[in-house]
Length: 314
Image 1 (spheres, rainbow, N blue to C red):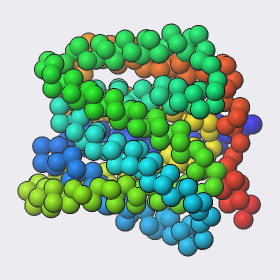
Image 2 (image 1 turned 60 degrees about the horizontal axis):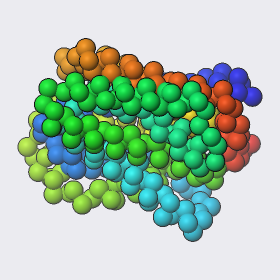
Image 3 (image 1 turned 135 degrees about the vertical axis):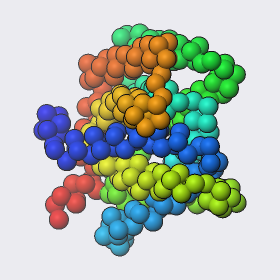
Image 4 (image 1 turned 90 degrees about the horizontal axis):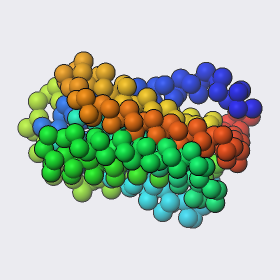
């Protein structure tokens, strides 16, 4: 069954598209931070995503959703952490942290997802998983030491670490919702809920749009259309087809995409210590994931959710 899932061309396309678009987002955010405030940028990005997703989601939204009473606050909390706060914190972090460094840290999401999944399903952490966790912490520490301006860099690093936690929570806790809702419909609910939370930054957005150059505003439009509307749908789809930790493994590719695009577009390239720390951190994350796979704890997650099964049967 696993081999069949991994050979699914749609799933592979969804994963690769998601990683490329999210990798490019680090670069676009870094590019516009001189002109857009963290709140204004997050709001405009999600506003555009909220509108852009409607044509894709219309057929699913017209169907009567089978909401459970507790799903509504669940969706609101998940949207607040995984989208609203994630984007606000990442925008804040990239005012002082390069796109490549931010992507190296966010690339640790598989570790957070693995630890949360192990905790939720009451399963032990394999020995090599513990070793990998220690290696990853060492790598992140090296990245922190590499900053030329220690104070500002450490603040930025803290924001990115918070983003990593929020993303890990999102990846794990979205799974129960995907058992009941189609991934496109669920992505729409989450993006809309996060946009409502971010409306508190409307005054910042009005000021930013008035003062920002057109090219930077167009970059935010790109963020809303592609890394938000498209990528969150493709990611939700991938999570319905693969166990959480296997889908999260693709996050290892984020730094490669971001570093390459950061070099081509912004002329940014991580220094030697940062790059070494990033490689060590990613190596630790890979070791955690492989150890989890070898422990075969993913068996409880391999079933295709009901929402997708019903859709395929129509």
